[in-house]
Image (cartoon, rainbow, N blue to C red; front, side, top):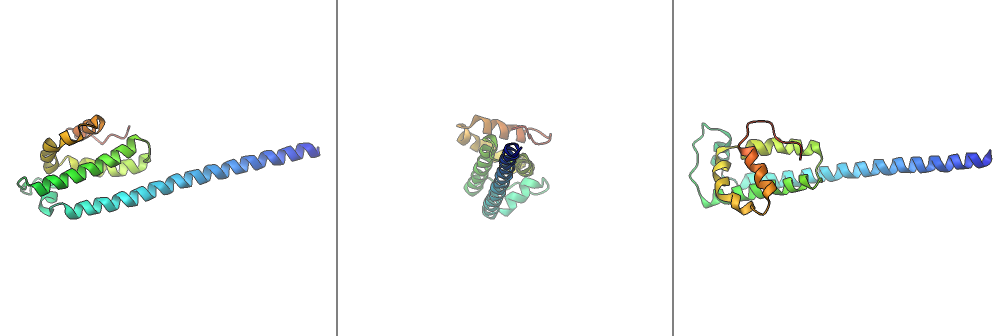
Length: 152
């Protein structure tokens, strides 16, 4: 009887320890997602500051006049697309949760399907030829009015 109780005690210690480990791993994963969200939100805010205001407004509102092409606008679009590529690569590698990805993807779709980004993508897409999956993803976003893909 004492031996049985001892084995039961050891077994429950293993179970409780395993549960504690699972909870710790889950919390660490969530904390990493929070850290990524904070980091990438900061990067996005920096991009917004660089982007010409009239171009940003024209991208989201067809009533606004489309700004003329410029080197500054092309560079800002390139930085923005590289930012999206970074997030997309993290997603395809499995480092972002579905919930976090859906949150960002909605804004990515709305932004990249705008007139300014469509125009700039025509010039910039060759810069991303090394990443065919990303090019296909952006093309699908820009050419679709359907909800954003969440199956990555």
